[in-house]
Image (tube, rainbow over all chains, first blue to last red; front, side, top):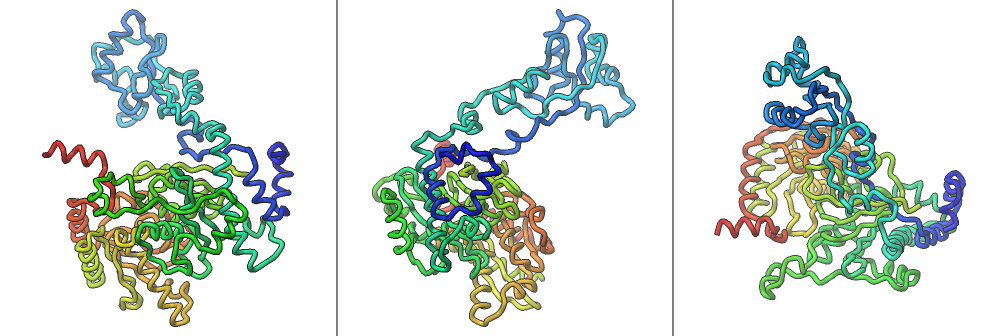
Length: 363
Length: 166
């Protein structure tokens, strides 16, 4: 808790030399809330697009002018902007005229809406927000320039803020993240004593904890095997371990179950209140027979929370999309390979069929 | 080239008969098939078990048994796959620095080029060639998506649709 208040330089310096044990305690006990990684629409500065704006001669005719314009020169991609502000009216995007460079905006209006040829006193080109505002903060910023249509979304506002998780939820997330580090601690301590945070943070190894939040239980855990097998990153192993809880699985890893027994009892000693195990898997036949809804049986990682030490790479992130994970939490950024923040935000690619939420900022 | 894609298409048909998304794949070194597989996602309940991932596994297995350095082995591999590799598989193949990937039809749902061009994130990029027997590959996919995925829970939208049809 005290670390949170310390200046960032000191915190970073401390992190390198902290023992892994102390670090895990800090991850677990810190009260600092997590931050969602949102798409660029929320985080990047406003993009402006150049449009023609006309000042009307007679304000009394404004509503008639707007009706005529909406009919003959609709705003199309600028629907999020109100057509008029005071005595000014949006005419069209500058791009529309670039295709006919000899035309002035006056000529363009005469061609398209002849009846408005004398409606405007003068014209100007101005930059207006290219995209609709998503957050109140953006709407306020936009409104200084022009009025926008805005539908506030309470969930998004909360997701953008720094108080998303209640203290109880936060302690749960931090506990599962601490367990991800404990997995690394368990395996690394077999090779080396007096482990430091740097032994984990400076390697490329990863560990994964998969949790079913509906029963607050660890479904699967995994530790990286990339040194022996190039696709056995911990997230890929975790997905396979989840499959093992659903009558499936493809990899004959040392642990035939979703959770290595020895590792489980190691974790249990340090995290006494943590539960293990998945909801019962029901085959399609059983579901039909008992007239149960398919949602009563686990399906892939649907609804599951995934905790990783490090931001997953492109392969693993897409694997988690395929697995339909519900939320992904990670602690360290992966500057070279990370696909949820560093290199790209895979969970924000609109055309994908599944999107999970991503949270970080454990430190 | 066509022969390798024909074999990949055979594997894709096999997947279709097994009620899997029909994608087949062969790995080739010096005009010789060294690994072949198809989708086994529904059988394994593991959504990452795509044809390419299975082929990678069998190459790793082969290399381990014969004491071959897999990284240098993969450098000579040309991948023939009936559908453009998804973002996950494309990333895996980039990591392994395979020589070339030849695909049948584009993958506009998950494609590692079409949906998100992963070559932007990697220093190494394999040579990517598309549109080899694309119609055949697409025909298999269309056949599959006419039926429903047997493992997926029924979506509300689909339920509503069937209701209106009935």
